[in-house]
Image (cartoon, rainbow, N blue to C red; front, side, top):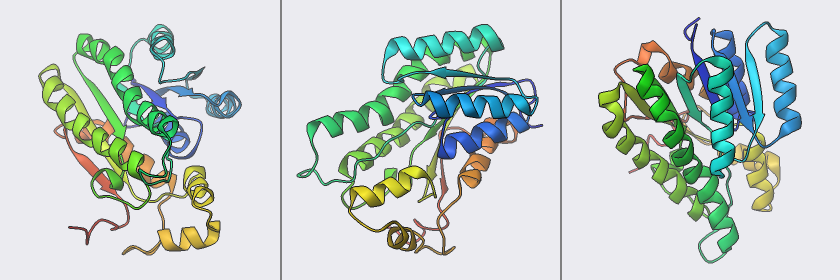
Length: 255
């Protein structure tokens, strides 16, 4: 029960890493606030967690919009009493080089992957500061630390997340707010399979190629959730400003 008595707000909570993290945080004693655009999947997950006897709310929201962010946060504070952990996990990818990428897709990737973190943190940090503590976790990527082919907007966005994490850790450490990011490698989620379709590749071949790393496989959402749990918990009480790579060794041989 590493999160007993805490409230965690998770964006992108209805699928993949967000869903696995919501289940884990709830099992570890947290009240969980699920935020996602996918109302059907979000409500189903909330029912599942509630059926296990855990405290949960779901708020459908577009986290690229100030009003939606504010509504989700205000409801969480009202119903759960505060926000101790913010997991900025929502993200999208568009596999394209600069020359292939539309302006619309560039804007969408930056809005979901970067702007949403800014908006959520701007609202949540004062709440954590008044409480005297907090943990913010951002989902970056291995491609926020090293480049990848045909992923210009995604790499730009995740590189921004890595450095924004460090900047916020410096700014808000004096308020006892820890800010860290997770840099997952390829993880078996719907988004990874969607990448294959964007590139016009067969899913099975794409997954085999993604598994070419020292541990010889792609990650599981539950494994990334365990990293989020560590950063959210008191076990990481002296950890801030870090980028935790969870990628089966994929970046081990990169420059």
